Length: 436
Image (tube, rainbow, N blue to C red; front, top):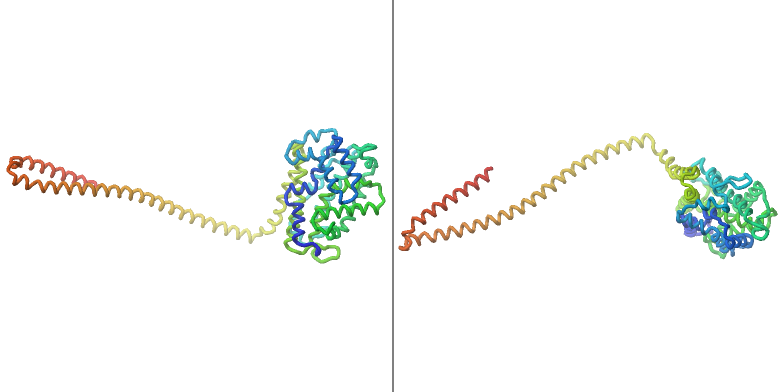
């Protein structure tokens, strides 16, 4: 991988697994399972491109033909629409029911049989990755091989002497399996040349796929067998997810340097590649699950696929969690739990004090407002009484020295006594309030 820049490797892997939608567009899976040949124009175009495309420069035409025959039901899958009508139609790939002849089971049951027995390996198993350490490599290969074998039967059933006549060549399943194994072995043996010698000196993932396609054509030209150009192109479409998987798989290095492995030894690339492998697996399982649940959410296949998803999501963490849960860790965890509980109790007490102080502060603010108002009233009352006292004292000389008012001194005296008694009563009331 010395010939590929690190940023290019990361960009290429992101182009495959950036999101589920990205994966679907890049690998044509599970759209490949939605081939609908009930309309003559898309059907004829698809057969024509399967037989006519022979060079990588024309791959966009092949992809477009595939998109045309999968547009209707592929869109239903993308938008989570019911697929019952598709699954029950007379013409469709054998996704849910067994193909005629009894030699192959349906695609989804075969998918389940490859993934139901063991969960994904934990990340730690990739410390020295090689052909034996990735349990799912054989499983994911088997899935797409089965898709190819089943779709060959489907394409043959829909072809005739003029349209799709390449598929009139009958190839036994066991012979087809050997052909597929030979092609894949050839591709895997030359994988680094496809990664490092891209078309038009570009190193993006599209160039890698184009190189793989040209490699298949080279193999076809050098090998004598019963496969036609249509068979090779259908194989290429069925194995697009596997080719993307191979790109990521071969980015990872073995523990020791070998002439047969050129994986990147950059730590960031390695970690990203491991994540990308998991996402390839999970996206493949999720895409198959979407097909099944949209057909029948209560079927046994749907339940099993959901189990596979749940198992793989949890199994990634269970083994690593169990490794660290030693007795020492548990004792430390217990002590930390007690410490945390004590701290929480102390925090609750402090919180109670803060709440009480906040309440007292609110009361003080309320009483301060009232006290301010009472003080203002008291000052007003004080100045009123003071003004009254001045007026009263000023009136006394008038009554004493003005001859005309002397005869009313008795009235003045009575008023003075009444005022005195009133003041005494007010003073007594105030004193009673203070002592109460």
